[in-house]
Length: 260
Image (cartoon, rainbow, N blue to C red; front, side):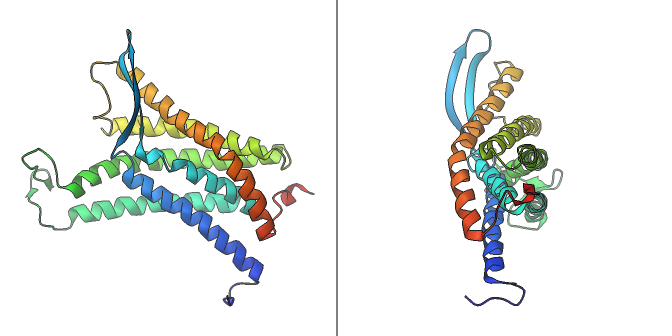
């Protein structure tokens, strides 16, 4: 493949293309989970208790691809440094804003639905449902709003902790910065997503109104965090493998910044 004039060398081009793949996977996954978000919850099980009533273990489908975003930012942090990882996080925030803008624009432009002038929303059908786009738009607005706040807090926490542990250990103990940064940042993310989603009304079909609200929210937070904790531990092996293979392929020494 011939080089473009802005590519200094074949090695430079290789490094930029791998960065494009990692950042593209990160941003694409982020957009997908914001649209899917809380459209559906996966029921993992129920537990009958004397004090709390029926407790439901569930995770939103938007949580399923989320661990991939942390694997991507950890790889970018390890291979390309903190500045590039933060740049990708900021681009993710802009992408969230873009998703919100398109959802808003798609709803305000004239269509074929009958709009109630008093509310500005589409008239409900006989089953008291909005047209599909407007239902998706309502849920996606709630998911994206929750995601934007939780995302900024969790991703910047993840990148900062990753490099904190890397500086502290002088580039050693790869498992510590990979797992430590992700596990702590996911506490921030899990709490923020559930609380904001509940606040915007996105948990209406999941919560049991006969059981105490605080216990159910706590259980949803713990269930989501438990899933992310498991995924974080599982991604340690691919993180080690990809760091070594990509480090050799790109001729990048992740320890170089600590070697004097």
